[in-house]
Image (cartoon, rainbow, N blue to C red; front, side, top):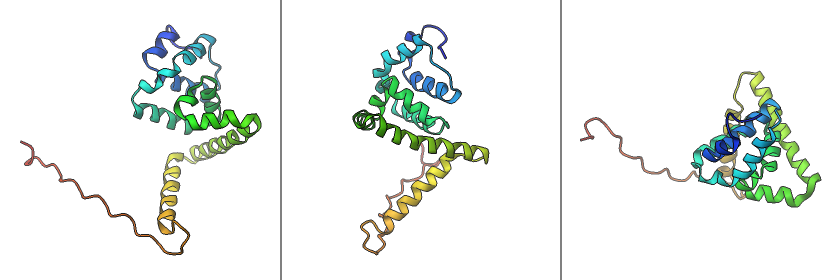
Length: 168
């Protein structure tokens, strides 16, 4: 896979393209052209200058792509994992190849789940949201294992609604 035009210019213009290139290469089982890969490595340190919601959106797409393992391998190869998830990158580097492989296999399970969800015509993200909500409910129900349910925190006061009569 390669960029249209000069890869160095493209990655410098918008470092989020690094994450997109990783997603497409992983999802479509493409190899990255050497010049494109070099440009990605060269400009990976510029990812933090991008808007955090854009970066987060691309990371979520990597996880939901059905090729998250290959995406993480490419993130490690271009050193983007150090930028996006420094503790995870440090742990994988420190733990050695056998332990890193064990953790990367968990992404294989995620990819299999995404493929099953797609085959059923559902989005895996919905299941992830339901699972997070269930965990939240479980934590509120008995956070210390005391056997007593905890009441949910008081809700924030609602903001006044804007109506056409309240706008001058």
